[in-house]
Image 1: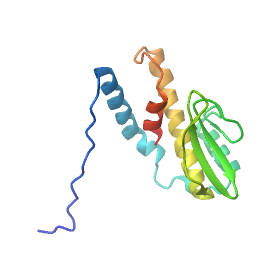
Image 2 (image 1 turned 90 degrees about the vertical axis):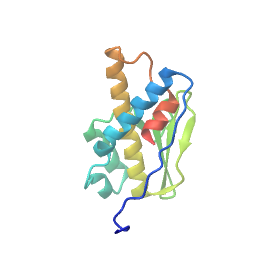
Image 3 (image 1 turned 90 degrees about the horizontal axis):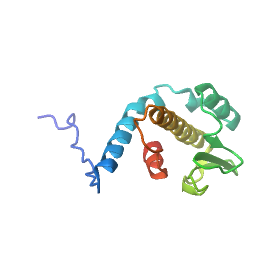
Image 4 (image 1 turned 45 degrees about the horizontal axis):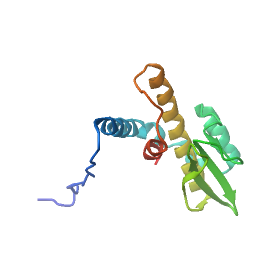
Amino acid sequence: MNFERRHEPGKEEVKKFDNEKTAIKYFFLKTLRRFYFYKIHIPNNPIRSLQTIEELKHFLENLGVSDERYSFNAIRPQEIYIETVDNKITVSYVDKNSQKKFTTMPLEIERGIFVAYKLAYSLHLLKNIEREYLQKNSLQETFSDDDIEFFIK
């Protein structure tokens, strides 16, 4: 038997929930994350060739990502905050209380541009879904910061 070609068995995390509503939301977000993975991580993504923050802004604009979803100079609720210091980029998610929920370590420019794109575009997609499903009454409440973090990471 050829063991080199055999996939290693995967271990999937088992989650436990206190109530059905939380379980359904988790399953919904996990399904959305899988569905949008290839929309965010497209083959030969031009984002990999970008070298400057200005190119990133233009790229996000072309994707339809509003500057409400990201910022380079002001911390606003539920956005991706991108800082450039000493030719390094740090990217943070800012929660509803205008606090940084998580922050990357300082990244090289090219890697930082990709991470900023991934997080900002993911947030854009989730917020569009949220708006659409709230209008259709398929969602009763907006996504929490923990929900957003789970989806965009």
